[in-house]
Amino acid sequence: MIWRFHPEAAEEFYKACIHYSEISTELARKFHSGIEDAIKKIVAGPKVWPVIEDDVRRFLVRRFPYGIYYLLVDEENVVYIVAVMHMRRQSGYWRDRLESVGGRDPRRAQTLKGELS
Image (cartoon, rainbow, N blue to C red):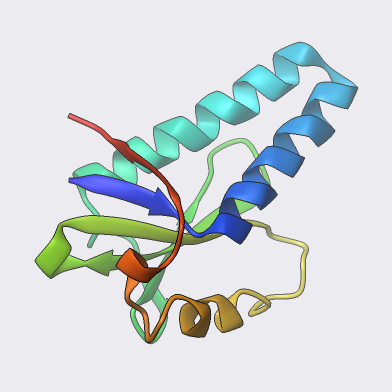
């Protein structure tokens, strides 16, 4: 199974890493590892976490106030991450990203992607 970031979700992740690095290099490393671990868990069991709205699911990141919002595209075997959201941010701001990927087709967006085995 592979995973992909919506470009704005990748930017959120990057900005959060920068924010934590300004506080502490170690904190930034732990945040980055926390997101990587979360993605591994999502890819290992993408249907485990609850559907929040339509087909969008949410994984709450351990030890950090972030949630990963994603879609599962079964026919492509893809986890498509639409947001890496700080949980105090206004919810739902990411909804327009679903339309920006061409009717929820993650293949039509430029993304960062990865494979986990």
